[in-house]
Image 1 (spheres, rainbow, N blue to C red):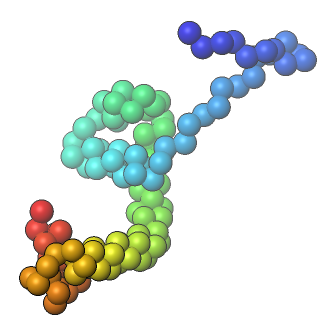
Image 2: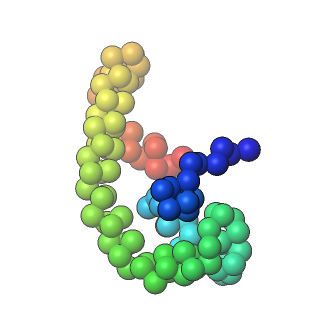
Length: 112
């Protein structure tokens, strides 16, 4: 049971803080809608109003642009992680990993 917040000076209850869906959640919503799931079903799945789901659908282009603009940062982090994997493989992997290339590790990761 959630405690009731204190009333304001006018006697009204303060509004509950709304949760903003993450970019990942918005992409999942768009994928489900594209896959044929109804707005009502998606809204139930995420515990949101149908109007919120429709608003995500309307802003689909903006959402995809936001993802595209955040991709370079993600790519940089991925590249740094791959470089660390190469270093560790060379240090502890023995003779077979001395000459391992970043591209080879990328291929192994993408293959799984």
